Image (cartoon, rainbow, N blue to C red):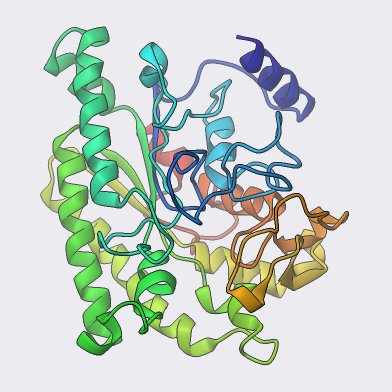
Length: 356
């Protein structure tokens, strides 16, 4: 209760109105962009439970790959929750009633994705963990029908696929995928596998689902450093093939699955708007992270206990891959309320999804 009280105090300072949540629960799936601590006890290099990670987060490092809150943390706030959605690795008892965060750094749609980093919880495994929680909900809600009705009102956020490129397809020394599949074939394969995983989630109660598209991977500092200081457009084009298939996947689910209300969140469109209006958003540094990394060893995360930059709100990136809290907030605003641009979400935004 002490932690929840602290969060209420912090969110009130931010001007957030604490009231009944718009939905009963919020379930989060994905990779390091949403991970809130599920990798902390894994044997993996994809871990962020040490300073300077969490320097701007209440309580310090948690396992979030960020200086502060992530987009899904902000979405939880916007939805009216008075606490952060707990990670599956530490959720206990009735906490599951408000939702669970299953996201894992290094995770992908494909099971082998991220094995170069060590331990991670693939989307397939995240879905298995979700099914286990659904079974536990019967203990609190009474029966399967009650659980189904309850979950049909909840929001589901899924942001995954980036590692299937940066920690699979674009690492030919570790993975054969780029030799086996053309970019178009690989995107099609990923969508097919993604579709099957989403159908399992749907069968276990997931009806209101936000599919979050991929970032322009060619613009992360790690890639910019290898492209003469500019975004790698060829990488962005390959990743864009996956993003381009998501609206059709949304249409297919909404048409063919009873009660399904899927939406697509176009993070790339939000990023493009930011790039065109950097000063309006307060960003001054776009091509390097805020914390120190050791590129000579291939490290893309902050060096432990390093001193990060002071002007964190002016940086787009926190380390060599992950956004700052400032960028996460802009993403979350565009995801939740896309009234300023019809290109951000399809067919509705997360706020509209919650109201359906």
